[in-house]
Amino acid sequence: MSLDLELLWFVVVLGGVLAISWYGAGSSGLTLAYLISLGFIHFWGGLIHALSWYHGGEADFTQLGFDQFTWAVTGLAVGRLLLAPIVSKHFPISEARTAAPGLAKWSLVTGILLYGFLRTLLSNVPSFGAVATCGGALFIAGLCLFAWEGLRFRRPTNLVLVSLGLAFLPFFTIVSAGFLGYGAAATCVVVSFLACQVRSRIFALFFLSITIYLGFCTFMTYMRDRADIRDEMWDEESTFGERVDRLKTTFTNFEKVDFSSQEQLERIEGRLNQNDLVGRAVFMLDSGEVNFADGETFRQALISIVPRIFWPSKPVTAGSPDIVSYFTGIYFAIGTSVGIGQVMEGYVNFGTTGVVVLFLVFGTALGVVDVRAARKLRDGDTLGFIIWFVPGIALLQPGGSLVEIAATTAASIVLVQLFKIPFTMRRKKAVAELADISASVWRGRSTARPVTAKLKS
Image (cartoon, rainbow, N blue to C red; front, top):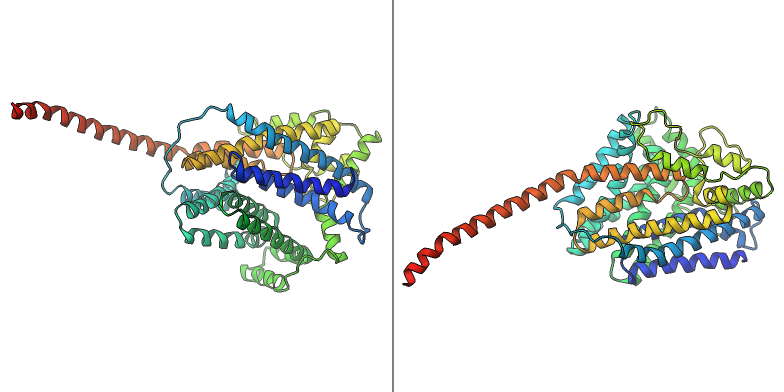
């Protein structure tokens, strides 16, 4: 298939996911967020190589990598659009809980406490640090729930506050850590969630499109001055005011997306063309220069689920630069973060078959979680929504390794099970009190019956 047709196929699949989110069994936006994130690191890199005026990068490697990306998108589409609805119907339907009062605010506060404070303090404590890190996902879920309450109960203040929060998030993660990606990923989840919840499809499409465009402009502006920004943000002697001034200097000269600019196209090539790395891995493996992993990274992902507190010497750690270097032949500077991504990981294990099967399974699993979270929200079971949605956010790492996804998902499940304890106890207490009141009323009526009968006689 030509590159042009493969690019069109991605757009078709994206439209199909959006359509089933609107007209199918419902969606909490998880699949849409994953597909958008996956497209950011693959689609745009392929698109610039389809432009006749761009001649940078390695077109052959990009084409090889984009071929595998197309197979991945196909597997994801079959899993999400066909298999996930079937599997979801066979899941047992648990008793719907009533909405937990104040859950959105408690999710936000707990998320900030865990990710903003305890994450650093517990970073060296096995397992506890991983659970605290998942506080970021709990915060994102709280934002979604807060926005949903604004839509359902007609509270425009909620929506205004969420919109301001989304505009602030990317800049906060730049100031605090020097990275744009964390805040952008969080914004993508919330925007995808809202696009699946608002009733006006035209407004949802506009909202989604303008967010993607502004996000792309922010990326271009950030990448232009990234070196200077990180020098300022990573300087231990830099004050908060100096960091803010550095961002003001950058974003007062906000750069719009211009595909005729060779400089901008090179930025996309350098940071958003995962196809190049995938293509190099395909070439290395097919030429016999390196051997296939034969499921080794899958095995490591299973091992990563075991909490380190129970297995202190566990031989698996997050991160994948060494794996990427082995399969691509490219060696990166120390401290450089380079994720293997699910497309490459599927291929280095079992070739194209590995890519298709991995994304078929992944699309089905993500689709089931997506539908279940949406169903809980539709039934008003906000706590059930959090229980499904937070681990679902952990799955949204298209550029990461399966080890990272498995470990983060396991930690997220632990977090939501701990988080639900006080709300479950409060609900049980309320049910018990209601039962006592009902019993008292029933006893009172039983006592009054003889008197009533005697008066009638």
